[in-house]
Length: 125
Image 1: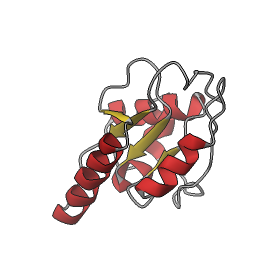
Image 2: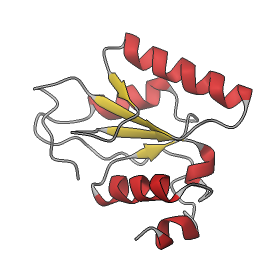
Image 3: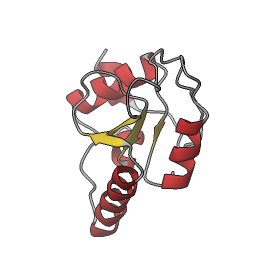
């Protein structure tokens, strides 16, 4: 579980990876814009507190660099929910809204949650 207080700061969503198609890039950009408009901080740097993470489908499928695999491992170790752009803004906002004052909830809403993350994650350990 993440143990950050959401009452002291805006919720923060980490975006990891580079979308591989024009459609995926459009979804990625639209999701960032909608979250920004909702007052949620978006970032591409895994620094400080993070409440949620959006990853490309390739990363969730295990096709990633060692650095991306290490980031995924750190996110999972901290109990931070990871999803793809398939998790729309409404789902992300709902997951963040369920967060209590002291503990950001971990809500498994990703369609990719049951996937095996591949050798890239295991080799990055």
